[in-house]
Length: 619
Image 1 (cartoon, helix red, strand yellow):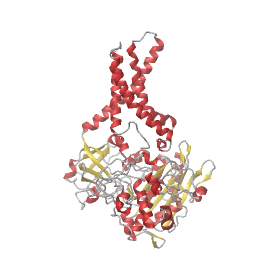
Image 2 (image 1 turned 60 degrees about the vertical axis):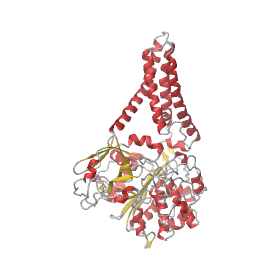
Image 3 (image 1 turned 180 degrees about the horizontal axis):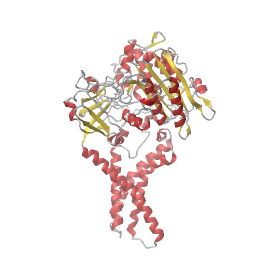
């Protein structure tokens, strides 16, 4: 479950308490810093593997693997790694590529002819293996894919076939990038077909055993029963979630295991004197090649299940992956030039602890380095025209587009030297620049030091701007401000309806004066507002994780029923406004009620345009 790097940067600014002046300068200081984070944030435990080219430097764990039974975490404790799992799907595919048994350019339809998916550009732009691993299929993320749990005994194909609605390319494959849990699982099915083994068996024989990852598995093993950590939320322990997307979500591993895996990556595919994976394969995994921007040199974003990260304004790239599931988070990071890396894992999805540990470990890796600085060249003319507002056009899912159209609006500003990008609501600002000797088609990020920004031509939308793996389209300020103003005014009216109702009820208690018959219309705005807010209020008051809608039938039905009744109630309210005009009604009551009802009509239309009316979690 992946966070966008823009969000990640904002969170870093909010929660990071580590500066380079306070960065741990030796292993003892690092250990003390992590102990402090664990105690201050209350995260139950943190498993850590610090590695360089010679092997493990420090492998340990801090805190409790199981609070109730006072079981301490150790280097052998087994944690749930979440989306870090995807890296191993990439490794499996690249092993077969190394052996000449598979090509990244092979067509999905040829390899799995019975597999169901929709791509209206298939004849000219087919989905290929590389698209599955670089998240460029264009497939949606449907909550319905994750409704209910799937036993470990369920085959990958069975799990995928439970829900096929998300496997529809929303744009030309190989043009836009958006995170997908499904793609790596399909790649794992291809591995199964070519090798004649289940992916679990293949991983055990050809990945875990050769790397000495004795505790690792994609299923719940006896070893996990004995040494697995208990996952926690803020409310307490959570049960062991079972996912049908095992190659994307379900890896269990210990700090010791991840130290061995990191050693292989740091040594460019070699482990304990043996070439486990070719150097070219490791390099290829780090670089994306199937977006519009890759044609002009943008390779950050997702490579073959490996992501590129940065740290402050150091102009240095880190590679790896993060992971998160209910009750656990993890991060695996390495830096090839430093020949060093780390992995850490926690048994609680504690955002503050996660960001502080990540920041601390990256600062530690850089403790002996000088900050990289480049003299920026004049900004190429083509980029100087990018001033204005931009919205992303490759949202994680269609269901989330209503959030990205508001929350992910970016402001682009240029001067003679820099392109500054910043969220509409603030929080951070980039300084993308041109580097001497580099192509004028790309700008470099001062965060990763990699070519990250380019103006590209999308076959469906025309001129767009790619920033790492994100694609942006310019939007009018009228649209940006108009949408925000209308939504803000509508929500103010929604809240006012409760104040208005409370004031009327108080007045009724004081005065027994007979009301006009039509004044009962004043009850309608508050009723509509209660329906609109029923779902968020439920999650707020109950403390239930919204992700539980994917696991709970009763909550899924509640969401569907409320989101169905709301638009019907708005229609009924509009009809009531029409009918009440023939009754004796106070003008002030009528026009206030009408204003709020029309605000609800706007909100219902807005939500409906994004598919949030009669919303079926399972669809």
